[in-house]
Amino acid sequence: MLDILFAFDPAVLTAFVLAGLLLNVTPGADFVFISASGISGGPRIGVAVAVGVNLGITVHVIAAAAGVSAVLLAYPGAYDAIRYTGAAYLFYLAIQAWRSDDVLGEGRAAPSVQRAIWRGFVTNVLNPKTALFIFAFVPQFADPAIGPVWQQILVLGAVFQINGLIFAICLGALAGGFAHVLRARARMLTKLSALMFAGLALRIALDR
Image (cartoon, rainbow, N blue to C red):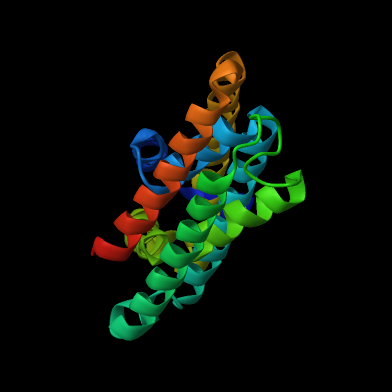
């Protein structure tokens, strides 16, 4: 795969990296979920959720390389089913957070790092817009002249993920650090994370 990476025009690869960074810093579903998890669970949980989200993106990249994401474009019913399932899952997390009156502490967003990674993974995989975004964005930088397109999508997807993972980890850690500073306002932050989860659920369910 390294020969594919080095075969890209440096200008094209640079443009891809910059576009990916810009997209990562633009607040979206993953941005909100990682922030809310960091706020309610602390830096450790925020970072774990960021890792989970990145693992979910791996699934979308592989699907894009295999052409599976095209199914979501061809069958709106499949798109809606995944979208509503993801929204329901986030709403369930919102209810859990809202009902909790415990003092904010590490692990509040999830009982363990493993669970936090799983939540990040599931939330990302069940957001069909991520699949469609990867399918629409990454292939635009592929060039059939330098090799199989599916291999280029995997390579570009890996580059996109590395940049995204670095940003997501920083975001989760900073959100968690902010929560630690305001630990005295634990109940407010718990309610805030619940509202963020619920808002994200509505956004996914209603936005097309």
